[in-house]
Length: 88
Image (cartoon, rainbow, N blue to C red; front, side, top):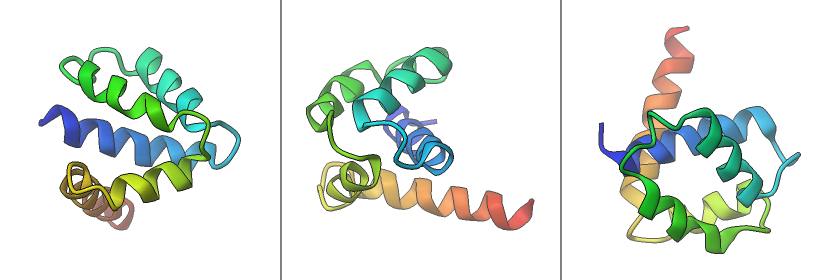
């Protein structure tokens, strides 16, 4: 799977679980620790996202959805998550 798409998918799933309990940088830290293997190759994307650090996850995700560099990855990740939820 494309590292950017996998990162977007993991961000959305973790944000669903954590809600507003973590800042975006804390959420990224949790992902980095929990999904080291899945995120191999995504290190540069994680570094890029660190600039959104102190924002609540919903705000950071909204900004990413409006960023042309990330829009496609988050749209595809959103579709995948909805399909997973509907098939469960």
